[in-house]
Length: 223
Length: 223
DNA sequence: GTCTATATAGCGATAGAC
DNA sequence: GTCTATCGCTATATAGAC
Image 1 (cartoon, rainbow over the protein chains, first blue to last red):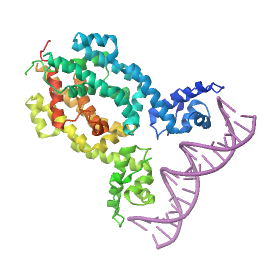
Image 2: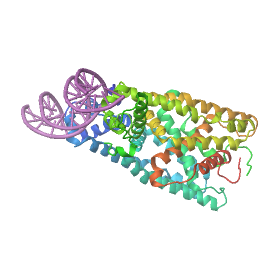
Image 3: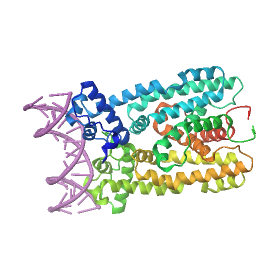
Image 4: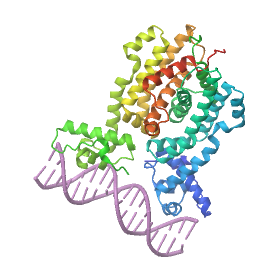
């Protein structure tokens, strides 16, 4: 089913390693494989081979295949949680305070796009587990998506009260904006790398999306 | 792995059926199962059980598991191709001719959202196969997504030339708009049914998305 | 810590009776 | 057209030597 393990970047370090080193090495090849083929599409044999150890070693470090998968999800959710939350960056806080709408949306879009591009494996893992209705989807949802809705929703509400934005349900606006970003990332991951339907830089995408959200595409404002 | 086959709506018709009837019955339960658990996550035994027949019957109708999967994808791509293409509807053609921007985008969004809601199985199947890099993704892409970019892109270009829309790469605008729609559907399918992050009608969503795309959310047009 | 060898179960797929 | 029975294979997981 999965042929070329070389592409996985299999570490052919066959010499003896410390427990922890081996453990994280197994983890790292497993991430690649699970993110490529999903949980049931990946075999422990493949993982062992890609890590350059016997299957028994995998089961020494992780009692079951499911436990290995969980370890990855935990690891990834934690690690990503740290670097993905864009609104905690200093620049973003400043933009929010100064009501610099464009900066707020542009920064968010750009940070998200870059992070998603940096960790394609995590994106694939997330989608696989969402489809499989694995708990990662829920954890990620609670830790990241939900707060993001709150943050952006609150900002929009503030700007509406200030009379700067027109009336519209903030959560719907958030969904629209996140939709542009995530759908674009998803396209990049799943199609565009081969099919080149749309080939633009992250900066360009972030700028376009922020402008569309704020100004729309019509020339005349016919409200 | 997959416990409650009852939820699949397993047909417990055990009496003798005609070949075609049995074939499409197997197809229909297989659609449910594949869309829920993906290709490698679904076993032929489950399919047989859900269809109320023996495994041997499944293999009489479909030589291999892969062939069954293909039959589903073909079937679904065809069937959906017919009803999903929104720009062929009369109302949509009229709106395009009359340069009724709002109607064009609203109709497209609403049609897409309704179709996607009608056929959740197909959406899940599509995502599974996209992640698995199955050919359905490519077929669907060529038959549906690509023409949609062309259609909407051409409309936007026309309106830009007429001076009604500001300069912006049409394909990026298309991506932004489709992003809102598809991401919203995806959320409905994967999360919202349980978590109720955002609970709005398709009409409301289509209206909001069309308005955001066309007018943005700012009150003043500060170009 | 790592291996080979193996247990056990479940998979896709087939044979042959009815 | 449908079944039971079973094959050959591969999956996860374990035992025990080094």
